[in-house]
Image (cartoon, one colour):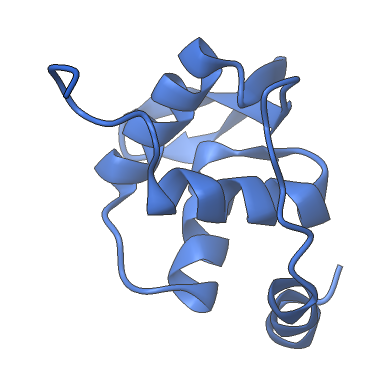
Length: 106
């Protein structure tokens, strides 16, 4: 048995399903949809899996946008948009797509 954590993750595969429907999204947006569609998860876990999935080629950075506003940490935020990468294997689960469209119409 190989050492270390297994590379397969239920959270990451659920994020793949979300991005399969959304086509692109930033971390907090993915987190909000994940909480609505699946079991509760921490935002930190979502960001961990986005980073790990990028390393594994499941996700790809689509772009980085800076937005101005009145945030608690300052006047500017940086949003990193992700899309599916070449190693992503979406299940194409119609159930997830139907729930997603019912809960959060595009």
